[in-house]
Length: 86
Ligand SMILES: [Zn+2]
Ligand SMILES: [Zn+2]
Image (cartoon, rainbow, N blue to C red; front, side, top):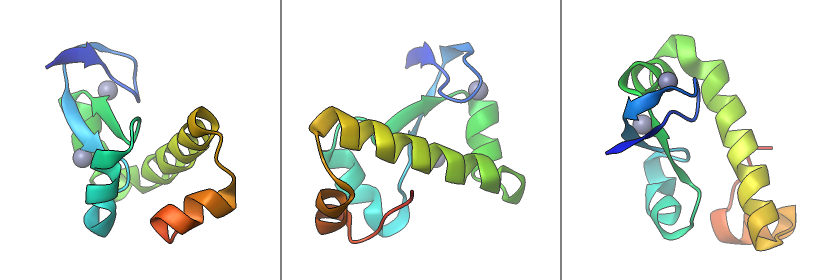
């Protein structure tokens, strides 16, 4: 899949990254914007212990973006996800 890396802005072959993983993966698949494209380097980074801060920042940014796009409040978000990242 070609695209742009959400983290470093590089163009090229990208991988799909579920911003809210684990038990939230299924919900992420249903809601637009919760799966982003990352270059292989950034994808590795964000799943490593060194990438912990970037991962948190991305979750916060994406939650704001998706809430904005859907006109949701934090309460709406919580009703859907049961957890907030902001
Ligand atoms: Zn990248
Ligand atoms: Zn990933």
